[in-house]
Amino acid sequence: MSSDWGSLFDVDTDPEDLLEHFDTEWFRGQRYRHLSDERHGIERGTALVGDVVVRGYPSMPRALVLEPAIRKTFDGPVAIEEKLNGYNVRVARIDGDLLAFTRSGFICPYTTRKVEALLDAEAFFDDHPEQMLCGELVGPENPYTDHDYSEIEEVGFYVFGIHHRESGTPMGVERRLDRCATYGLDSVDHYGTFTPAAAVDAARERIDDLNARGREGVVLKSTDGETALKYTTSAIHRADLEHAFELPFDYGRDFVFTRVMREAFQAVERGESPAAVRERAQALGEAILRPAVETIRTVDRGDPVGETHTVRGDPKIIDDLLSYFREQGLELHIERDETVGDQRVITFTKIAQSTRDKTRYYLEGGTIDE
Image 1: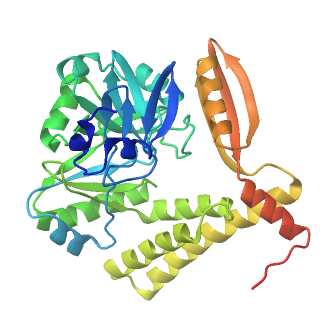
Image 2 (image 1 turned 90 degrees about the horizontal axis):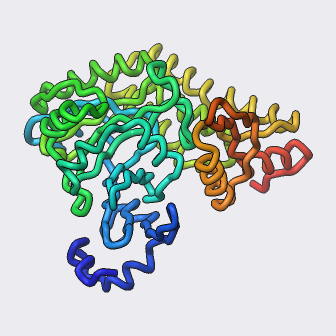
């Protein structure tokens, strides 16, 4: 490890001690390291590829009540953009190759191949080799999330940030939008820039529209890109809970609690009437109970339960992706596996082993000590 990396990361820890916290992986015959959890103030997902540093994407605080959160967080103009429901990807060009890093810093072979096909980014990286594209990969054909967007047939990559690869410093919002337009890069929807006071009503208006369309929410950013907040819709809270209770023994109680509390704060923030709160509660209850009942019935029938994904691509890339999941200890159930042209198309379920095994145990008479 280069002796000046400690100063680059602005930590006092010995570089060799820091390196011990990084996991080692291989991609296309090259060894690289990535940080799966934040350490010593270094962001989760930071990767080391040879002598090249790729900083992780910083975590983003969540607002539960918009007006006081905006007032407390921002003292200047606030940009409002859509928050998409996919998975966070950073794209950097290293030694002439585009590489796609997931949130944990893993170079995903499937995502890298998709990004190579989706992005015409050579001109951008020719002019900005020190930068990385931070975006959301969304759509029905991806191996990590299962949220569909009607406008996306397979997958799409939408830029929400451009950061310096080594320092992590973000490009300002207006310049980033200009760079995306100049180089033909798809960007998340930008709704405008407002004073902090005006941003409250503007964000609420967008949230109402996104909620009606079943979309995730908004991100509010300072114009220099340094400060950000996220705020999500009731529709996505319910969708998250539906997903969690499809696999009730695989998601922790904290996952459920946080989403229920988001709904509670949102109801108070909006000054909802008793009737409106009752309607919200009924929708929340359905989101929790109905998928759990269906999962129990599915296990009782002996059918697989878990997260189902469809992916397509070069057969070797698909093999690498499935091998990675299995190496992580995941049990996969293949639903469909066929060749379309020169691509392999596969639908698979990541088996929720805890949900399957515990549900089966209780169905067969197991008891709970309370």
